[in-house]
Length: 373
Image (tube, rainbow, N blue to C red; front, top):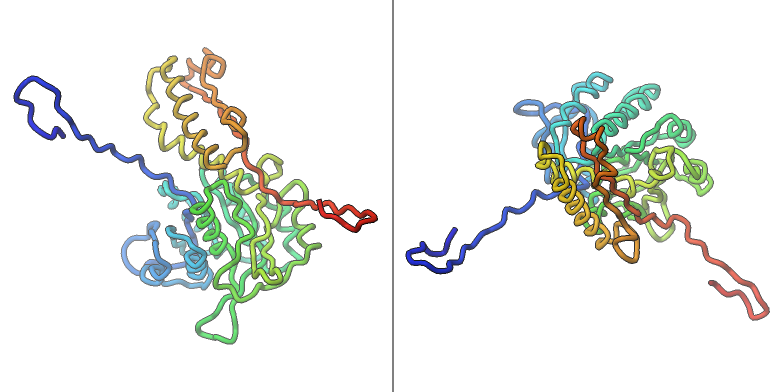
């Protein structure tokens, strides 16, 4: 709006307030579980406080409400809840379909799968993983079986680039029986750790080596030998929660359920998923534009600006931006055949920052003693 109405020829100052770009949220889960909505239609409900769960829902099992509470206890700020009527494959599919209207979420948690018969648990978890892969912008946080002897078989039956498996279960206080803690699946607490890491570090930060809040104990202990078996060099892994002397209970793993080496780390996979979400949100207005050199230049420019911001955050590695990423959108990536099909292709390469899982210290023994290098 002009500060004054022009009346004579001259130069006039206009103050223009730019419209802020919509924020791309990460670390926002949707929880699906057995519950009934107290009032209104059954649709995804937005929660910003743990206490809101009891205001909106009456539940048949304890896992869903405790998972939501655990999410907020670990520092989560925003989640959605979708109630399902029963613990069947059809009800799960309907709940996942109902969640598809949510554009802010990037995590999926279904703690009440663990109420099902053991034979159905893996089948339902694979449905969740397939949903995340089909949507292309979501990552599943799954719960291990509450039996150390069954975890290895469970992780071998699950496969996806877009999910991770966590164990053991967590013991928390039961207000109805203070002397008898109850065990719950860990996905809600883990989602809270994802959200806190995203907020403090960024989506490229590894959600691991973080102490769990509000947890009294673990349902069983995992030894280093157990963890070595559950975390093969390549292939689906179980991210173990360990009780470490003097450091509390911590998430001690950051692996996915992927069989591909390039997607074995949770933070690396989520970084690329977030890039795709950013592109869908910020480049949607390029659809139906003339497919010519000007469009190529715009896509290359805007993608490069975003990738450089990732480099500045430390999400991708390189001494200079050219070492950390590249963006290509030209006649090489857009052949005449692609143009005739109405497709425009931009190629983006990132050099993600890989978590340092194994810190090796070299002990050198000599006549003067042992030195650490």
